[in-house]
Length: 297
Image (cartoon, rainbow, N blue to C red):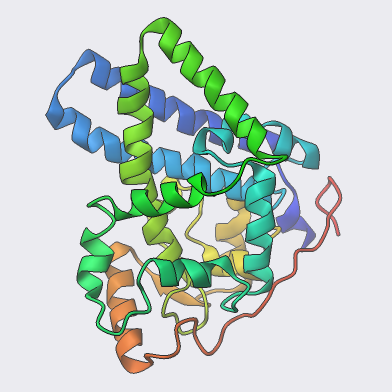
């Protein structure tokens, strides 16, 4: 396993730079060519790269997979956590429980599924899957969840970061840019992507975890779709997940090819096994092992 566990600071820097550069480039194009026809698709493009930063790369930092030095995953959180009103430590405290208690009441995802209305017997899943998040429910749910978390030892960093950001945009008279190219994409498209991702990962699976092997999705989201192998080996960094999947777990877990395929699987599994939400072959809890900076156990 050692060859799969080595982190790479250069790849981390390039991944972060790619996503931020894409967001700035899309924003610049809209400033130069200010039309609604360009702006609407741009919101969903920006949201995709926001998801890549604030979900995929933050997720890597949470597992200490982003940088070789453990402390860097926390010290550089202003690049991938604070802009999304989170800190690495806040996310890690919740996420490690998810790995250790998948599908049990301690798992935050169980409550999320309930709050998202997924356990209702008369649920219209077509509306819930395709329409509901785009109409703003995803933004309502995730913004509400974040806003109810009290500021503590970690929260002050979010507060200071956003006071500084708002001060800069106010001083330069560019608050509209912040709204158009960060807040709206975050609330509308990024949170919709997060909604689909969280449901897709585990809801009505046969094995407990679903992987999305869509090539474009994994290109944008840094292999975030290789979720089954991640749950089996949570300390393998993102850029080695595809190889690890094919070498160690070929065709394992539930496999989806995209948004529509996932919808079909959930509808089918729900009809066949209505009480088996997390699957009867779940890989079970995967406690996170500690590794030194070289990646060895």
